[in-house]
Length: 373
Ligand SMILES: Nc1nc2c(c(=O)[nH]1)N[C@H]1C(S)=C(S)[C@@H](COP(=O)(O)O)O[C@H]1N2
Ligand SMILES: [Mo]
Image 1 (cartoon, rainbow, N blue to C red):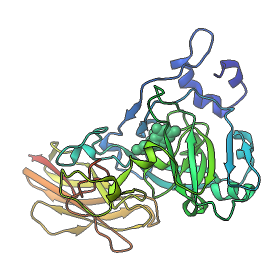
Image 2 (image 1 turned 135 degrees about the horizontal axis):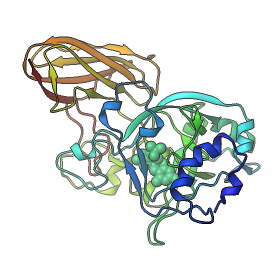
Image 3 (image 1 turned 90 degrees about the horizontal axis):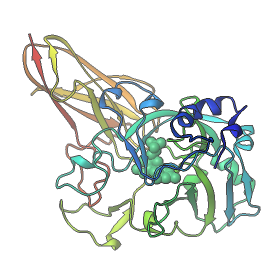
């Protein structure tokens, strides 16, 4: 538990915590742990720009955030030469890297799979793009000296399951991904200290990989031979090794852990069911593809041909680009569909591959709207 007076003099950090303090502090300033999960979608209309504002950035957490603890320590141990423990001030002194990357929940679009599958019924809003600033995980692993036969990094956060019968949220990433210079222990999001909802004081950032690896409220990294134990690694976040018929039950041995995000584009505007004035129209949205850069987005209006949209933002790995397609329209019902193509030539599929947990919905996004005189 953190007392209000412990936050005095922490500058930007206490500013970031201010909202939370007002909302959650009781009479004597004790922060209260929130027991319910927090799952909030970003409204579709915000996917018309390169950076998603933090205030509307989607939030996903299995058990809700732990108390805000800016004094939290990060331990790195297991198969290492010399274990290490660091706090926020230690991390701030190390070289900082800033990169732009999409964060998307593996379950984004789950509600759109047919037949329906259980889980958080996300539509389009469990994704966002931010700049992430922090320390390369590789720099920390260089300090501890990783044993030659270590293969995985087990990741744990400070949040706790609501009941002892519910397993802790534990994930791991292969050592090779941990050593990639883009894997960060991030302290800042969009230039500001991380908010509690997004993992304050530090979280993992694994560009190109689904959100379940981006552990928030990070407390413990352990080098080990095997993947993390428990439900969230052994059972959850698995896809069939080969596509299955929609609705099929898949035996565990035919499943494998998911990692990178497949190619996708989403139309922010016009909104499905909206109406617009006759004349100039604009189809706008975002496109991204896991670890590959986006090369092209094509838009089709009504029964016309696919036309290359204008792209904003650099063609770089991990990042989304904004696409815009302008045209003139007469009154009547209109439809538009978008599809993305990455620099490896991979095209977004017309239909998404169904899977038992409803991960990675990435079908062509279609919208229908009415143009009025
Ligand atoms: N400690 C912890 N980290 C976590 C989670 C969690 O429940 N606990 N949820 C993960 C999942 S499934 C996602 S999609 C992302 C969401 O990050 P955001 O809330 O910052 O958008 O956080 C990840 N990190
Ligand atoms: Mo997620």
